[in-house]
Image (cartoon, rainbow, N blue to C red; front, side, top):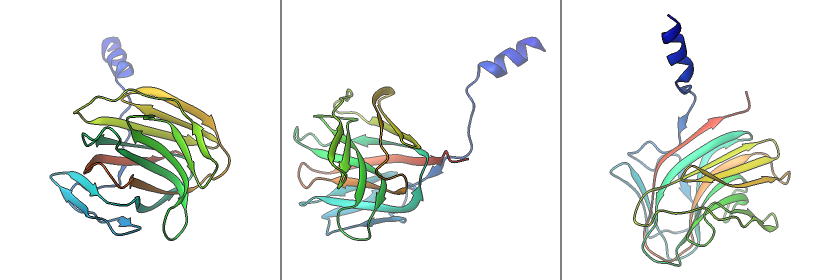
Length: 187
């Protein structure tokens, strides 16, 4: 009996409260804010291509949360994308925060309409492979991870609730997203 209890204590807690923001089959729940060249679900992935800076936003709004996704970057060395959170605004570019998904400052935090760079820390990407990004926001504490390593940790009170989004900066090919999920940490 002691061995079973020890093994159970050593196992990670499996939480059933994750919600998929992308169902793996459709673009339902996501809305492009401007014209895109391509925004479609392909084999469990969201593919996004645009010739201009575009945001594609979700309907779900949260204050305290953990969100994660996997991203496959195009080969273009100057490619730039992002995962937005705590965003507000009905049209065009949202106002909120963004974890950088690029080769320059992956995992850095940018305040979209909220003062620009908040953290220029840089995580490590795996070229030619899927990269895992995670954001945890609870109160004014915002943390980001790239491929399992903590990259940024800031205190920011500018905006404490909003929706999520993904970005294509307008050049560099198709960015691919998958396994986009979130859990509410407000309880």
